Image (cartoon, rainbow, N blue to C red; front, side, top):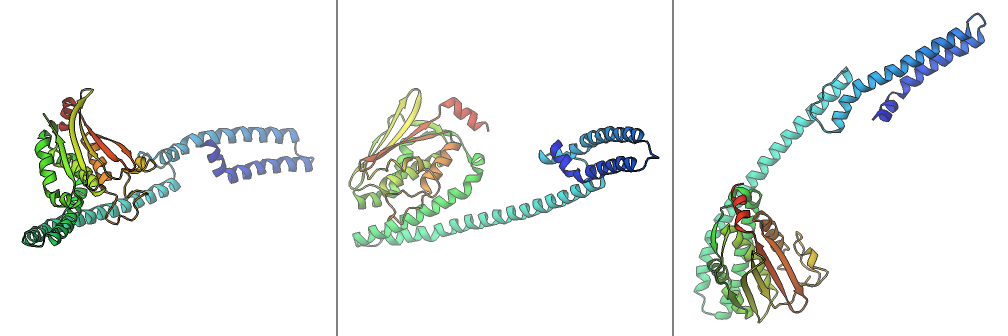
Length: 328
């Protein structure tokens, strides 16, 4: 900071030093003037200049140091500093005003989108009833698959809009995973039937403390992923305890994940380097699952072999951790 201060005041310092050198030059030219006296005066002037610079540095630098530290507690000690302060205050107020307006517009758009999603659910339910009346089995399965895709995308958007306020939406309770998984698999029955995929559930004593709605969302994203990349196979879902932690394993025997893709599967928008032809993928499902899992203190581990299958393991926190979460 001191070096910066000297650079800022270099023109004044150069001017004063130049005047002192000019005094010595005049004393050398004019024999009537005492060179020793002038030199003594120049030395005293130089000492006072150094002291003056030190005092002014400590006085003026406090203001700029607080600006550099982004500290709002800065008070101007000169008219120019007052101009700077007024300008910064004006800019800050304008920024906060624009930020407030943008925040209000975003909230309005969010509310409008949520309202639209809820309104779309009504004709979507009616469409499902129409599809159920179709007699052609092949056509019925195709229509139901497209209906399911639309339903899941709307559900995903609904949860995306709710996610910023997830901490306020959590309700920790005892959740029966067996019932939860049954409810999640039911809507996917036609899709699974079309792809000849079955489920093998091993869920003895599968009660856990969690938020049922958001836990279901995490599991839904993983199961959808497993179905999407599997054909004519069984998805195994197993509940067990290991090292005093409750774990849920969702194992599929589909196409698997390439080794180079594993570190990136939870990245936003990532859709795999080996399945670029899959236009249905949005790259959001696993990203959202990991984000929600973080709020529920759930860790998600993945083991996969390309061409063999993928195992997603959810490790749920113990009861004490959830007591801390529910008190937030």
